Length: 512
Ligand code: KIV
Ligand code: ZN
View: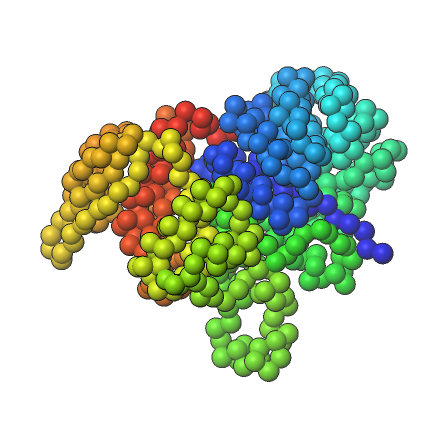
C-alpha cells in the first residue's frame, strides 16, 4: 500500500513574509477555510509572537477550522512557545513548530551563540513545547548549510525530548536536489532515533529548485511531509509550490507511489483566492495554475488533443479545478439560485445579512453585465467580505473624462466616516486622476507600490479586478476592487487600501 505524504501549507506564515503579501485577519480566515476545503493536513497559520495581528489570526483560525491541524511557528524560547500555545488554545488539533539556526554562519553572525548554546536551547524549546501539545515540530534553520555532525547531535537530542516532526530547512534555497536528498538520507541513517519522527522538507526557490529539492527529499531522503505554499508564494523567490508537488506526485504515481489527502479540484480556486488577496498575480505559464497551463495553441497539438487527449495532456484541467467560463446566473436569477451557487462554490457567508448584501450586489452587477460567471460571484463575495461597517472610506460614485490631447479629469464621491465628500483631480491618465482626487481629500502620505489590473473572466465585458499596494511608515497593505469599469475598480481598490492603512489592528509584515 502507498505511504501517505503529509501536506503542510505555510502560505499564511512563510508566504506572508513576502513583502507586500501581508494579510488581514479576515483574509487569513478566508484562506484558511479554503485550505481546509483543499484538505491540507497542516495549516501553519502564523507566528504568534511576531505581532498581535498574527496572534489574533491564529486564534481565529483555530476556532474556524476543524479538520486540518493548526500550527504556529515560534523561535526556540519559552516566551514564543507559550504565546504559540495560547494562540492555539481552541484548536481541535494543534502543532507547535519551533526553530533555531544550526549553520556556523547563522550561529556565529546572527545568533551570536556557540554550538553548545544552540544545542541546549533547541532541547529546552522542544521540552517546553511538549507541555502544551504532543505534536511538536523542530526545524534546524539553514539546515542545508549546517555541519552534518552537529545536525545529528541536535536532531537526536530534540527527538529524545519529544519532537515528532523534523523539518530539514533549505532556508536560503542553496540546495541541489541530489545533495539535499542525500543529506536527509544520511541524517536518517546516522541518527539512532530517527524513526521516532516524521521527516519533512522545507525549501526556498532562490535557484528555482524548491520543488525539485523537495521531491528529492521525499524520494532520496525519505521525507513524508512537504512544506509548501499556494502559488509558491514566499519571500524572495518564494517557497515550494503546493500545486506542483501535489500534481507531480499524483501524475507520476508510478514513480512516487505516495498518497495524499488533497482534493485537487480545489487547487485553482485556492490559487485564485491567494492571488486575489495578496495581489501577487500568477504568471500565465505557471505550472498547474497559470492561465495558459492547459492552453494548446499550436495546430499540431490541438489536432492531437482532439484525436486523443493524452497525446499532449498529462493531467486534466478539470482535475485541478479549471472549468470553462460558465454563465451561471443572470438578471432574472433569484436569491435561492444565487444561494445555491454559493453553496456549490463552497462559499459560506457568515449570516443571512451578508447573503442579502451579496445578493444585492449581484443584482446590481447583473443589471450592468448580462452574463455572470463563477469568477464574478467569487469576486463579488470577496468584495462583500472585505467591506465592514466600521470602514472609514466608502466609494459612492465617480465621473471621469479623457480625450486625446487633454489631461484626464475625474470627480469622485465617497464617504469618510459616513459623511459624503466630493473631490476633483487631474492626472496622466484616468486612474492617476482618480487617485489624485482621493488624495486631495485624504492626504494619506502613502506610497503606491503596485497597481495591477486583471480581467476576471474573458471578453471585453469582463470585470476588471484592480490591486493597489500602498506603503506607509513601514506598513504595506493591499486593496482590491472589482467592477466592469476599471476606473471604478481602481477607486475601490485605492479606498480599500486606505481603509487598511487606517485600521489600527493591521500589523507590520512579520519578518523572522
Ligand atoms: O526557511 C526557513 O528556515 C523557515 C523555518 C522557520 C522553517 O521558514
Ligand atoms: Zn522558510
